[in-house]
Length: 284
Image (cartoon, rainbow, N blue to C red; front, side):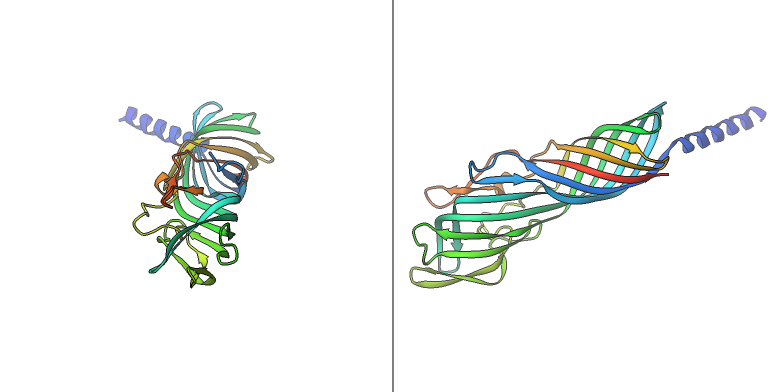
């Protein structure tokens, strides 16, 4: 009986020590991210976009200064795309279906919101500096794009030209979708009214839509460094490198050209997400 009491006391003391060594915290800050992958030569550019992140952290000691760190994060990642050059515009109604060649100027900011779980090894130096490295898994909960585009036909510049607002919801929009009364174009002497605000899949026909543009699952490598200003307050820098092709190739057509029949030419490329994160947080 006495041995059993000693065993219980040993377990209690061990549990208290382990609990004291564990740490919980919160982290919040800004993300600067972009898509890295092939673009249409000379006419398309991807640039950094900003978003924010917020979440909770937990560290479990493994050995001396080495810990296992897990997080649960709400994060916004995205991209700013600029396109200026030759393109096409597909107009499909109940009575008209044409593919017009022209020039366009597009400015589009994509904002993808994820719930993520980064898992990292954490190495602490003199209780002031922490270096982390590991991986993350993100699940897409919201995906939107906003911007504008202007199009001018090459062969019919006086009849087919337009300016439209891009209002994309990549998880919910339907083929050919849009809203509002927009520009009117003249096709074969008929006046065709277009949407003012175009959805993500505005130029797709229903038979062509096969899922959404952005995949739900993203995973990759992550690493960073944090500096503790006080015992509990820290600032940090983190870098993410995606290992997943973010885009569904069946919904990612070339913006520059179509085939001889005016049909989409789908790109078979790899678009990864890369991001820099600036954080501040508290450790309890």
